[in-house]
Length: 379
Image 1: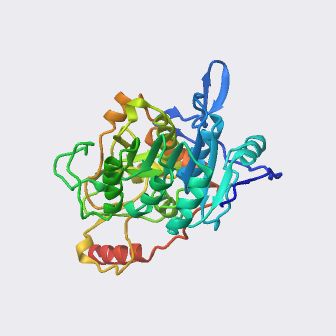
Image 2: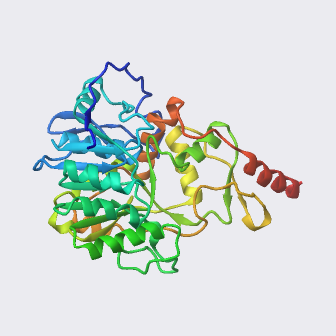
Image 3: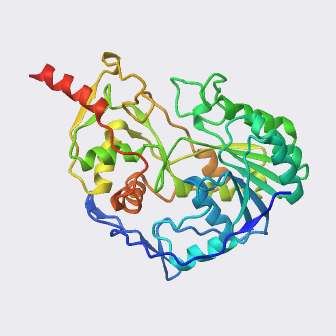
């Protein structure tokens, strides 16, 4: 039988943070303090209304989305267990999180160590423990979900992290939940999982984020721009730079995941989740500069077809228009993103890259290929 472990709190050193706002953007100073009912609370603070206590299992939960979502659920009073392989620390103190909040969270979170690819272990351990709700935020294939459903026949809700990448490429945008999907996309495993859930009879909800950003992001989204801005380098952007994309803050996504819990309106529904504004590639580069307090960047456009980058990725976004409507989530769930783009990027910069922490070292090799050819042609 799998063993649940309660992590006891240990004293953690305080984390020193940069000022929440280092500059004025468009004449308006961004401030991470907002006033509600005369209580001072940081913008993006993890707070949601209480609900009936549930025994919740999170598949994953030690990175990015999971660390913010698990805190929300614990604050609501739920019993939360993380299912991981145990290769990463089960908890870590978040930037800006007080020692007391972290100790409280660490004392309440539970851990179930195992490999989700070991289907027999998954079935035996989950059936032995029993859970009311499952959040699957790292599942990629339908076959990984089947043993969970088999182990928990009385499951109240299965909440899945899918992707807006399942939509079929279209000239008519934004993508809506009823739009055609692409069975050949690199996210086809998530699409197959949604089909499995729909056929299984379980009460399910699936969220389809677009690009996610924010502190602790393990994908080089905003970090890619911050590296170049810090180094004072030009920003190479493919083609015209007017390609439109969309980003959603991780804390807003975490709130959405909690909002669908036990929500009858979310039963057997798919929701796009992201920011409610769109941005061009050039606009994103400029927004990142504002967020980090850098001068407006020099942008260099290039034709990707003129280069052979090998297996290296020269730009962190797909070179196309890619954005989705979040109107369904706003109207059905009452969701409204707390962060606008520059505020969210500022939050990410101040609590992560601006503190000297990042996931990947800067690699300017593809930039140099682009810039060398561009400057050679200009001369």
